[in-house]
Length: 485
Ligand code: NAD
Image (cartoon, rainbow, N blue to C red):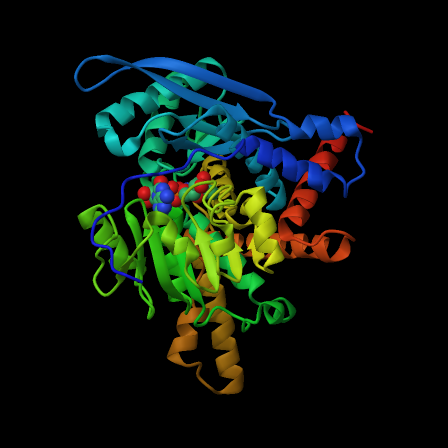
């Protein structure tokens, strides 16, 4: 492919060809035919419970007033609190936030996180805003949520999403605490906070790590890999990733460290390709220095802008930017064998039909990007219990393991080697426990979805199976509330 020297025009997202929430409703309706719940109950689950659209004034850096549009949508209150990230993007709109809130409900159900689904959005471009303006907007947004009872450790707990991160969560927690200074649990009003401010080790990388665990497990089924003409395992698999933000970078890093090759990456300025593999850490450093990825040493800039990386021939494609990226315009050009939806809604229903016909194994967003909410759940538990995971038992475990080893060495008369000693002679710290809890979560959830697909006549794809599994769990939860028989 020819080398493209000029940066492509910034074009962060196309206008959707249809409603995103409409897509989620379509998936719901398709899954509903495989379930036998009361139609009224299905109606209750399907739509959003509370939609809060707000407009508030904020003084900009020049001293002028700007009116900011923002949203918080709580999709389902079958479990409380509700949970979901806050998106900072100039493209935020109500339909999108409603869709993302609904996906959160199903995601939480799939990974057995006891929350209802929610999502927030602020119509602002973080890249074009000063830090002080972003802080004023975030604090005012939190105040609006407090005023309408849309935030609280037992009510609704936001987290980061596209365009937001630890810094924004710390501002939110701090603003909330000024309204409830005597609430011992106030720090649990948001997750994804910096560790110094009540966060948890492993949350930053959680979504990317969850993508890695989920895909690695999918690649362990020999009969599924045989169908795709792939070897079992990740070693040497060729991967293309769209988006080098939080989710994309961490996913790239774990796949790279796990033996796969990152052959193509795209960002807002374009796509790059390197057959013998891109080092994600070097690319991240280059991106931070140049504010883009084009021209990354040793790689080729692809023609076709940010969309080009999606169309390279690869084993695993990971869209990790935004929704609507694989649509009816480019679905026919996609040449991957596995597509893992790290972003929310990156593939439209029309494109999905094209991919399924081609035999692509499509691993749906409501499962594969659930690592973030899983570890958010651990953070929320940590905040409510007011103690770091591992603090009470780490040393005890290490001593116990040492004692067992000593007894075995004495009885057998042989010494354990240095390398094994290092692995055995330790207790688990917070990060070890978070990684282990996340790995268990992703493996369990994948097996449940896959089993549902294998056992239900008529279900032939993982998305349908995931929706059936999730809706069934939400319905059962409602039934246990005693409202439905
Ligand atoms: P982020 O803002 O950290 O990163 C997104 C990256 O994508 C940015 O670097 C941006 O420049 C890039 N990008 C934007 N448009 C692009 C395009 N057309 N082509 C290539 N790159 C483009 O956001 P994130 O937190 O990584 O979220 C990414 C996706 O993952 C979103 O769909 C989000 O809803 C989903 N998600 C995030 C989390 C989380 O924990 N952060 C959890 C679950 C799902």
